[in-house]
Image (cartoon, rainbow, N blue to C red; front, side, top):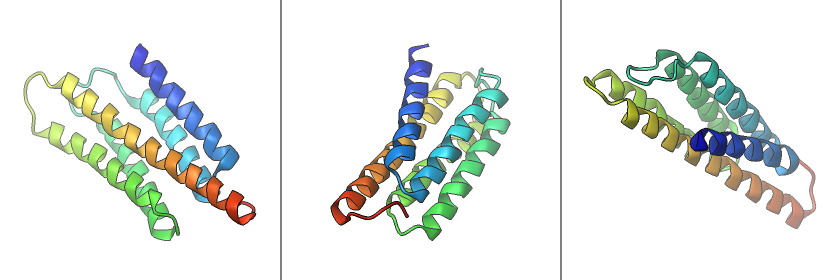
Length: 140
């Protein structure tokens, strides 16, 4: 329960900070990540004792979105976010080859690699807000 509350708190804080101080890239990413979090909670069965194919589809979608953002953005943080999301996606493929009780490791690996994506977004939002304040410009 603690981890779920901390995860949803992280998502909410990241989303609202990106909306308030982020540029268009940060806002797009924040919206996509919030949608992904809700979609993951809808499609998962929560056991993680087998490969969560529905969650895999969500994670691949997030990766492709972050990759597209990284390719068109003039910011550096989307590259880091896409890279961390790629690792999270690869965890699913690793679970395909596992037998036995690996549900705890699978869940922890997926949860662990979701936080650096939010850290990258928060860092990007902070840098974008700082850049606009120092240059005195509006949002892109």
